[in-house]
Length: 233
Image: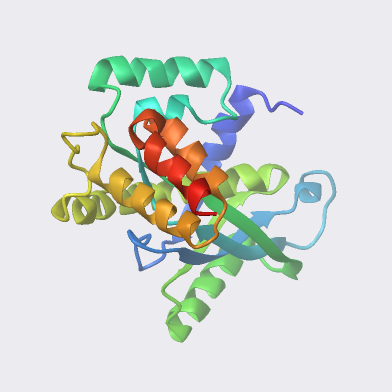
């Protein structure tokens, strides 16, 4: 069911992070975030009852940020026409090979519990407990019960935004955002392709390599080397 845009705006306005994770998203590895999403039960707007809160907890797995460009994004599947128009706009505005970061996540829900007390007080108690335990990679979010998944996405977006600057600086300091003069793609891309060639030479799926070459428009440049993989076999 499509959610009206005005509802989304209300959810965004009513969602806030009570406790940010103390650690930034990793630049060169996977980040495992534990979340606690606290909401006021929707049924309390319909019936009179003692204050309660719903706690949803789980893990969000943030993969290593991937350096991409507008040209690369245009070759990814799963985007609608409006998204493609936006990426075409970015390509015209900044250049087809302007580096950017793509973050990908996996949500692993764990438990949902109803507990007594005001939801805001419940959230503060969770924060106090996490601080005592020193859990740096845990986030506490106050959200909207009926659209808790939207609240979670909003929180993830804020965490990503807070990590973006440090991720970009680390990549830039290593020269991974620099454009390779011979191939016209970021240096990180060349290293990633070399890694995929290594995987394929060790028996990995060559289709993964082929798809990545196609997305970057580099198959012609690597075609001979790619075909040699099959001659060896």
